[in-house]
Length: 294
Length: 248
Image (cartoon, rainbow over all chains, first blue to last red):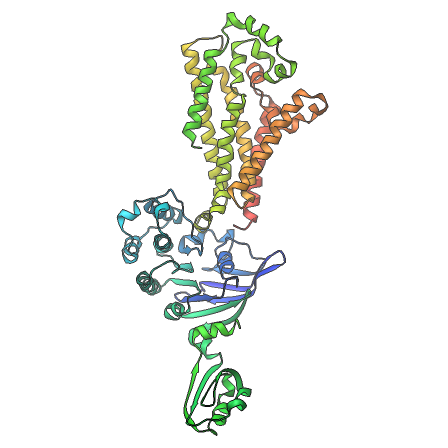
């Protein structure tokens, strides 16, 4: 099956600044793909290249089986996009914004009414000029325009920005339904719990380079383990520090980040002491994410 | 500035000129007055101003007020086509739809051309109504080639503005560059008409190819038609080339 997105050694430079370098990605149809990274990591640049807004400096990319750039114009009727910095026409009403963008997409907005209802945008609000909208209302309108024509592939750049928790929950349900319709969702976010909640696979970007990719479990599994041990009586735990990164240490407890392969040796070492309890767990996605930026 | 107020202002301006234009029996009086003006001013006004009512009315199609109103429309519309949308961020929503980039240039040129047509039609209507109420020795149809030449001149500036706008990141930058180049061209034409040492540079200004009094007398010259038409074509092509190569 043709991948929804595939990139090969994709790069983008702005003069001496490298925004994205050697990016190899493959996103399968029907999956929700999380794209993670701190500000300036190259997430938005990558999305903009995939949408044909930016020209890559090196490498290649295909979206829905077509090369990106001006050659990919025809395939864009099957693509939805919510920009990270959403700008709308202030004098347009909400409804005019949606009908205008529907006409440009050349597809019928089959899901508009459902989306408006689920996100809580009322008809009376849609008749008002966008300049009177709050940030949250603009974001809801942005989500509706991105999804209203039931796209086969949707790019969402920081989609929950400005949404209250109730609307966020509605949004997660919408994403699940979008996937159920067979659409692919490319999802950029800083909010790791929401990524864990809705994404099938993730990629982590650092300074324009891919540092981890796979299912959320894969990414977490590939990281170090958190080992917490408590003791029934005071011990000198300093010798355990050689096994990994020390997080907390006292004479009755110790917490370490340990490479997967070193876990058996740590357990053997800890068991020589009056062990009360030992907990070994993979890092959370958030910990895994932070590990790449420490 | 919206199109309708500009069109109304141009129509009223041309109408007012028909009210103050010299009647055929008043031309000699105007000629006397004309000879008292400094030679530089006479050069700028054109000698036909003093020779006929038509020559006087033609002044209305080259007056700074008339030109300023066209320029407002041309600069605003050409900058809005690409640079303004990029600067506001709304280009993200437009350019990710199945809309080829040439559509932005085509839409800008269409809006520009139609708007100029409306403004110039309003100007002709002002002249026509004025001549209906106060018949002079010229018919409004004589001004059709003048209006056509004005359309070509400002469409050429619009195409230049589109090419500039296609390369800029904000509407403000596009407006500044287009206005600066347009003003420099106007000033060059102005100075070249007054000062012989720079007279040979006058063909470099697009305003050189728009002389309503001469058009009224001899029609639109082939050189003007080719230069202004060629500038429109070159501006549109340059805009397309830039827009297809740039990041949005």
